[in-house]
Image (cartoon, rainbow, N blue to C red; front, side, top):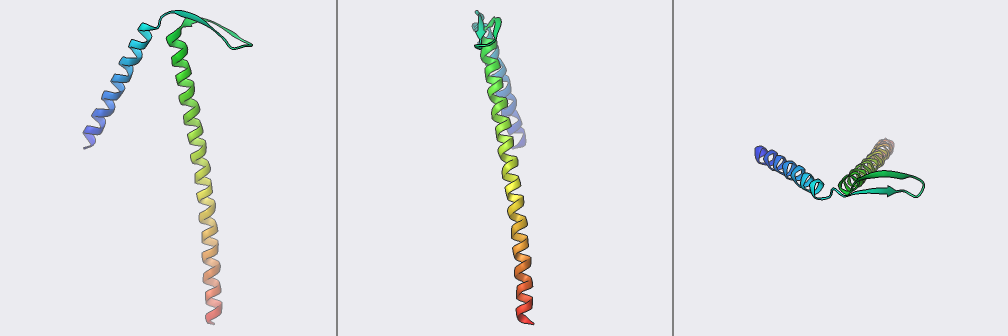
Length: 98
């Protein structure tokens, strides 16, 4: 089963690279990019689109990592609170039986 998963991953990577290469070959017209305060030199459309895709992936990954870290901190805080409450309950139960 492991080899099947690795094989599919390799096939997907190869397909992605092939599609990216075909995309780059078909979109070679150079256009400048105007960012209101900055005008970038003309580059092929494929470069601008792939750079935008890469920026979106990086923003998405960093946002996901930030949310995961925040969730982990909340879980850690809730576990500490649970442990404090359990120890307080056990101490309270011991005092009641004495």
